[in-house]
Length: 450
Image 1: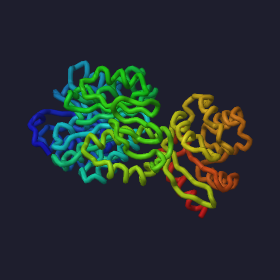
Image 2: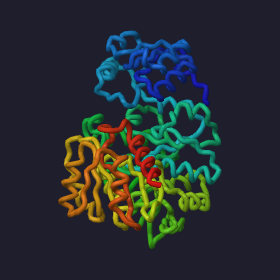
Image 3: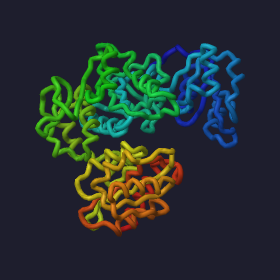
Image 4: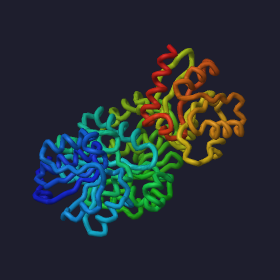
């Protein structure tokens, strides 16, 4: 960890706790800052805040009082989930108080170079896949960011011989000023988080922050099949490394004649890759490019590609029972993710789908249901998805209470050779706290079948 003096004796407000807020507050306190933490949750229900209080950090809980900003703070470290239209943030911007997120602190103290991965879909799979490739090549990677491990904690333990492989959300990237990854990846860009960013332009602009400080000494790996991503690349000063699943490139990563190619070198045959799905080729190509640029050897990369079957809750293979293969894709919280999951399979599919009703219809899903023989729906959108299934010509459509009841029904209406796929196309919050909980319920129900 670099011992920096930038925050010594500065008055800093950490707004919002959760994991990143606790880490940021503790780190700033260690760096000699005068830290105040403000969290909306009452102190009596806030063990994280109580722990910081015991370490001598000022804690204000129960609300976000705008008048707190009159206390002369020189910096705000914001929890990524707090939007910029929050009254506290709007007031801070008006007062000219800089607002950053915890990833900025992590970068400033890190002795290890960063690899930053962002995009709409595929971030977690790409991050995990790249981490495994670098570990196989003995490049001593550490994993951090939006994937669940706070970057500021990881950076404190990292040395010059490590790589910090970091999944980055648009929320985190809005709060960076000097952050400069040695290697950056933009997997793809689709409409997302418009409730937070207000416009797609705002969302894309936040994603583009991953490369705003890069120079010719750094690399930006980009999806050459997406015009919007390439527009970001055209404005970057980094060395651009494209990848494509649709076309042959002069350089970068692409697929040709059944081979994954990087800079003209055949890496591995696509048939030898364990991770299913055409959409995962984007993740694989970008991870291969980043691994090679990080110094990983081809053998280590191929060893991982032959064995890596996916991240938990992301088209995760669960088990095979009586000839039926079960896949958990609970992270598919939108229609596009479910379409991608369905495109990964050629065998008949029994699809389990449904969840939170955000007011949208599911007409966009209909063409992707061509290979679905049975549709099992649940949650608030059960009827809407069922109607889409009827329009797609699915003859067997079942409506059940929840995922746990969907699994035995799916098994009952399937036969050997079928795929039983949980890919809800909806968020989980109508019935489950998180998509992880929903996926775990699916896995438990599959195990109970045995």
